[in-house]
Each structure stands twice: as C-alpha cells, then as structure tokens.
Length: 491
Ligand code: BES
Ligand code: MN
Ligand code: ZN
Image (cartoon, rainbow, N blue to C red; front, side):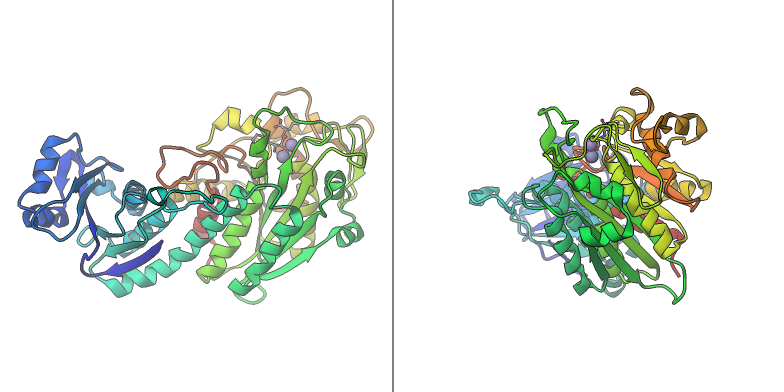
C-alpha cells in the first residue's frame, strides 16, 4: 500500500469522519454539500451513528467526481486520538481493499493533528496486509484493488516527516507477519537465518551462529531441542546502534521454533498446523529490530532469536534426558514439548553475558495455558522489575498491544526443582503452567532486569474484529516494543 499525504482529495474514493451521534466533521459537511445532500440522506437511511470503527459507503454520488464517498466514525470527539484514528483508517481500508476502488483519499484535514494523521498511515498499512505468495489462482475480482491511500492534511510536510517515524514500524509488523505466515517447510531455521541476515541492508549488524559455534558456547539445552530435526539450529543476533556510543543496549530475545511437533512427547494432530507460528516471539523481535532501523531510533538495541525445529526422530531428545545449559545449570527434560524454555534459557544466558544489557525482554509462544488465562487480547507479562513491568503495561495501552502481568515467585519456582538435576522443564501437574514456565526462564537472567511476554495467544489468530489483524499472524509485539522504546529509552 502506498501512503501519500496531500492537501487535496483526488481519489476515486473519498472518506471523511463523523463523530458520535452522527455529528459530521467539516470535511464530511463539505462532501455533503458538494453531493447535494447525499451524505445526510445516506445517514438518515442507515444506522451509522459515528461510533468508532463504523463505515458507511455512498456509491456513485452525483455532483462529485469520486465514485464513492465514505463516512467513517471516530466516536466521541474528545477521545479521537492517534489510536482511534489508526483503527478507523484501518476499518476504511479493510472495507475498500478488494472493492474496486483504487485510490482512497482519507480526509483528516481539520480533524487530526500531524501525529494522528501519520498513525492513519499505520492503520491503513496494517489493514492492507495480505499473504498471497502461495496463491496461484486468485481471481481478478478477489485481488486487492486499492493501492494508494492519500491522507489529506493541512500540513503535508509535517505529516510526511511524522510518517517517516511510523513507516518503519509498519514494515516491521509486515515482516513479523510474513515470517509467522510462512509454511514450516519453507521457513526452516537456516532459511529464517538467511532472511534475518538480509536485514543488513536496512542498517542492522547481523551475526548468525550455527550448531558448531553454539556447541563451543555450551548451549546444550538449545541444541538438544534441535537434535531430532534435519535442519541445522541457528542463533541470529541483530544489533542496532542508533544511540550514544558506549550506552548499554536494551535486549530482546525471541523463541523461534519454526515448527513444534512436541518432539517425542508428540502433540495431537488436531490444530498442530498452528505450530508453524511457534516462532511468533522471534518474529516480533526481528520485526522490532527492522522497525528501529527503519525509523532510525536513537537507541542501542540487540535482538537475539533462537531458531530451532522440534521434531521426533531417532536422534531426538527423550523425556528423562538431562542436558547442561550454557549457564552450567542442568535440566531434566521431562516433556520434550516444553521446548521453548530450553532454547530460550541458552539465548537469555548468552544475551546477558555477552551484552550486559540495561534489561532483557523475551517474547515466546510459550504455553497453551496463557490462552486459557488471557485469550488473544493480552500477552502474559512476567517480570522481576516493577518499573519495566509498568512501562510495558503503559506501552501496551498506547499501542493497543496489551499485556497483563502475572506473578512469579518462590511458591511457583519450587515446582521446577528436580530430584536428579538442578531443575526440570515442567512444573507439578497442570496448574499455573505459564507461571512455572516464566520461573524457569528467570533462572537464566542472572538477576538482570527482565520481562517475559508469553505471546501464545497474542501472536496467532488475533481479534478477528480488529480491522488491523489478518486471519492468523497478528505481528504482535512490534508495535508494543516500538512504543516502549519511543516513550522510555530514546535520546
Ligand atoms: N508452543 C507450545 C505452546 C503453544 C500452545 C503455543 C498453543 C501456541 C498455541 C509450547 O511449546 C508447548 O507445547 N507448551 C506446552 C508446555 C507443557 C508441556 C508444560 C503446553 O503449553 O502444553
Ligand atoms: Mn512445545
Ligand atoms: Zn513450542
């Protein structure tokens, strides 16, 4: 989707906002006048009342050149901030995407400030996202027709500049979604690593470690998970140095299980295909790094993603195996399907040791239990640092990628003590499964400020009513973490 900013509406579809109780904006009033009252008549004939996210289309109006006029709702005028504009723009784009309309002029002149106008660009881009790479027979009338969104503003120059700060974020979300959407026979760990390596052209430094290098580092837990796979496990390390020289970096770590069969503790067939998305945490980290580079964020950041396939095989690890992690701590593997924590523990240890970061945030589609607790609309947050947890919470509200904090603590941590090793990789029974998983990770951050986001619900099959979400991969985490960096760690 091409996003433009202009002073005049030239599209074949022109959209203007209305507020609660169907109060027309000045732009909408102008359209009403030009069309000889078509807008008011359509209003009267419909149940459109200007609620946030509502869309009303008026086809082939007389008196105007456009083929369509669209009225879209922003709700209460005082609440219509950047977030509301973002979502409303998404609703209009979703409505028009395959409608035959080619260029949408979104009239935000006199309605939204510069920042909110740029957020409209983000919403439009998120809603236009498609993953059509493997469709060879898509009929012409099912293909997207809309290719340009022209956002009408008073100050074009300022809006364009503000958009520069969001375009990178839109690209980062699209990248994260593509990675999650890709089928697991295509996106193996080596292929994934190659795609990360390509981000060097965006200005990131990228280093890829293979199994031999990880062996040398002593990453026995990560390597054990990949033993049943024909595909080589990889660790991809991305660096963005946009901050002051010598400033400690902030660090993000992602679970990148390119397919999770469960291993020898095999998962049931029903729904197993979703486990191509078991790399959603890593995709958010990669997308975030792309976003930070794309918008030239003034921060030093590292992103570390562990890329491994969890398969059953003659060489696969067994329930009962004991492995030694890079930290030296030993782990009794009682369930090979609790593999995410095994790859993360080595990635976390390496990250804190090598980069001495200000904090580490890890993202992982870690437990089915987090879906039971929170569904798709919040990620579970766990932290040893109240300030970091609070900031994540606020960034979640501001970006509309929300988190909800759950506890960690000794009562839960005790559950992962093992009879024969330093710990085991599952808790006692099924209770508090997301928390015992977080406690496991906490044993590998060496006391550093840390937060863990369990995104098993948020990364996949998001809110189908949200016009910014496609059917499967939400790209969750990119906007949240970008917001966190923007609001607290830049400059
Ligand atoms: N990748 C899964 C968690 C998951 C489940 C993500 C559903 C998205 C949707 C993870 O590796 C897993 O299998 N976790 C187990 C842990 C258990 C064996 C302690 C689970 O949640 O059942
Ligand atoms: Mn698993
Ligand atoms: Zn998994």
